Length: 200
Image (cartoon, rainbow, N blue to C red):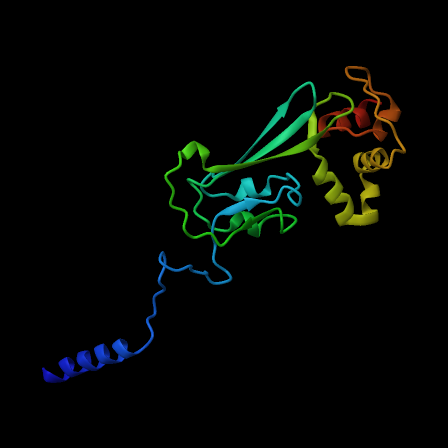
């Protein structure tokens, strides 16, 4: 029975004269390790509004809402930090790999109201030239064209969108009119494109 006691005394003496394993937070700043998963933040400039992060969030902390006003359509993406578990799925599945990033913020305790624990960003949406329904975010279409390069010419909507961006083509609204063959070369939603292809 005396040997375990000697081991305990030896361990106590060693730990007494060696550096502590714990840090001095909150009395001194703490820097977490490089791959620490903290609060996520959207990067407004690099997020393309594709909602891939929303689809893989296991807790529903990420959401989006499309609104359509007279001034234009927009998509609002929202992070709720009060229910986020910092799992990192949003960052892992981000198309651009930079649209949403987990920070190194570890001290997330707060006395703020839960309704204030969020981040919102807004993205402009492109409308269908026939029915005026929102199709996708402008940044998403621009990113797709850059990503696939010359292959974007196989998609008529992407060609028309690129021509508008280069001021080669003007947008003409012909909502609720019968489709004609030329309508195939417009920025259309999937439903209107199907109608334009099979009825004109």
